[in-house]
Image (cartoon, rainbow, N blue to C red; front, side, top):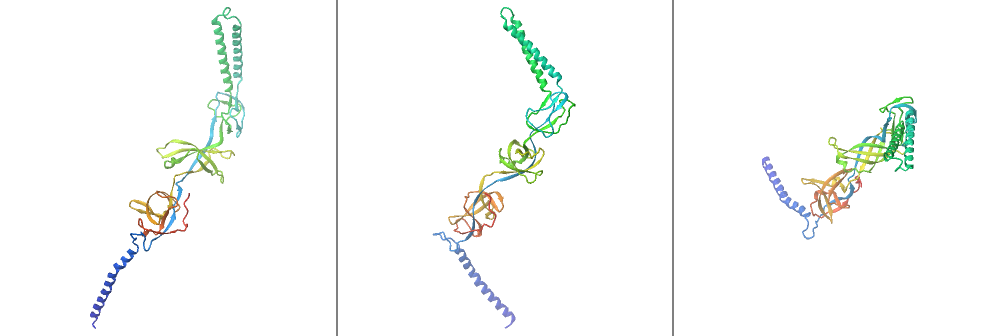
Amino acid sequence: MRPLTQIVLLGVAALAVGGAWAVDLPAKLGARIADNTPDRRTGRTSRQPVAIVRAVRMASAAAVIEAVGSGKALKAVMLYPEVEGRITEILFKAGDKVKAGQPLLRLDREQEELDVALARVNLANASRTVTRYESVDSGRAVAHNRMDEARKLQSLAKIRLSQAELALRKRTLVAPFSGVMGIAKVQAGDRVAKTTQVASLDDRSALLVDFEVPAALAFGVRKGASFKAITWALRGETFTGTISALGSRINQETRTLHVRARIPNAKDLLRPGMAFSITLPLAGKRYPSVPSVAIRWQRKGAFVWVVREGAARRVRVDVIKRNEGWVLVDAKLAEGDWVVVEGVQQLRPGIKVRTERAEPSRPEARK
């Protein structure tokens, strides 16, 4: 047989085999499609898809604010004399703990003491005159105008005595509140004016730390909320404090809220000026939490497949927050619902599904 004739015969044979396979292909595909088509009466398929599922959990959309701020004393002042004069006595040392009203410094006071003594004498004389007039029948022996004049002089004498005593008290500088004294900037014998710095006074029974919170998290901060703080000056120590005050407005330039925190200092370990790192947890609304692999995407947004009563359901979700392999979502899901994490390729709404629980190999959602 000639070669050309052999080639023609081989081609004809190949076309015959291919045609037979092509004719048989629709039948085979139809058999597979029918194999997974639900029965209209029972709703079951001859071969139900298998879906790997995980249970929905409820978790909080909590956030953590980390901020840095400098500590300052609960109360802090620089002390100045109320009047000019020469220092005669300094009654404190650096580091002394003083009480409110405790004398700290005295100025020369001889003239003021004399003024007080003179005012007391004048008041005594004025009072005796009034007493003498009152003991006599004022209607006959003493005119009303003389009685009025005596009482006026008595009142003026009382005022002058009060003024002299006030001037004398101002010659002594006292602590305006309880606290710890700083280093004295003056010494005995110095002449001082009203603008002369004497020493600092700090109430460090607690420290205040100011910091800024982003506007997006500002409404989660509450007065009285607890936080943890550390300072690099005391490594290994952790301090607990509370939020004591919140700013009244959001800063338009930085878009932050001014927050003030209070850290108790009962052991007197902390000092004003220390830098603190603050960790403030914020409580959030509770949302359903699903594995991140369960979320599917389409043009209209995200959704998950849920198996309820043995059938697949598609539930739309809005992603709130991602957290270590799990996602908080805003959706019509309840705790304990089964979401599909594997086998979604064969699912469509209403199809009956056989489920298998996934092994908890992924990180658990935080509750």
